[in-house]
Length: 383
Image 1: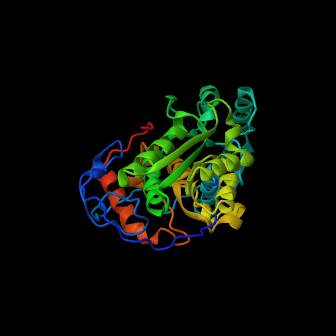
Image 2 (image 1 turned 180 degrees about the horizontal axis):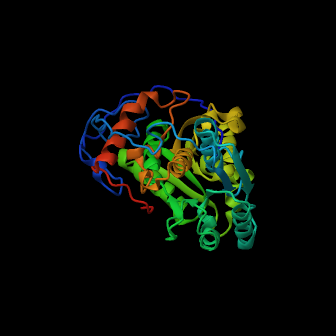
Image 3 (image 1 turned 120 degrees about the vertical axis):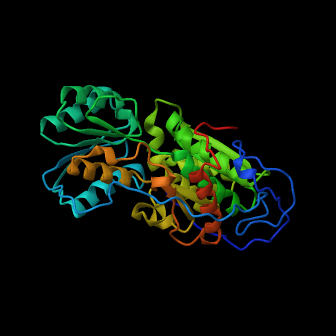
């Protein structure tokens, strides 16, 4: 997920908008038609009243507490397609183990990366090799490892495994690390609607799977919640089963460019390394973009296009991986949340570059409403 150059974040005319205190509760994202002053930021695309400011619930983390010694741990990190350097999902996982080195004294982290077309047997062999070498715990980055984790964890019951984005495995030595991607993506949708000048935005998903549909669902709902006029382009790079959609920047570029040609001026991607192409298209097309997983404004691999990245939907895989490693070092996995959501800062939004500073109160207001339960975000796209 990558670049975009921030051409126009000009202040926008205050126009008549809708007064609808309860509009944010509409799970379809719609709002009613009363008249009110527009919320701060963005454009006259916004038709919902700014949500009331409210403090978010206090976040919690397994990282809290006294000093933990992880020097005896030997960690295996099995990356998904793209690996370290994807400026997204895998880099976030790597940041978690890097933090474990600096904060917990971990000295051994062995990494291995999946290829886009590899057979299931290759994933299983990767995990089996890590376990046979005595690495413990082993973190599998991505739901594509589910079958292999299930098989290998059963073979090595004394080795602890964690898997990101899958909670289907019930073995006692396997810990799921799952997220409320739809909640963070809701905030991305709000930001896109506020920053769009044309009231026309776009979504580019990498692979059409239930997981990526959660990003899509939240984005659509967030945008529709704040604007009854919004138009949304909504595309995927590859169908389910074809994971090349997560590492094909040229295809990401072409899809985003097509959305921009149709009039979209803010593009949100959930496409892994293909997001680099999305950022390139936004920069070339004089559009804005929203990154995903990591704070992509600060990613070196997309630095040339950072000026078009207004925010990123943070999926704190780094927090989940670090907290898991720390919990293993403590010998207490019960401290981990069942789901890394807004309440525990498992998802969120980035403010680097200052491009959403003018709507931060809006974003935080919606964040608080989601945490309180006033807004329920669907994990299935409502089109």
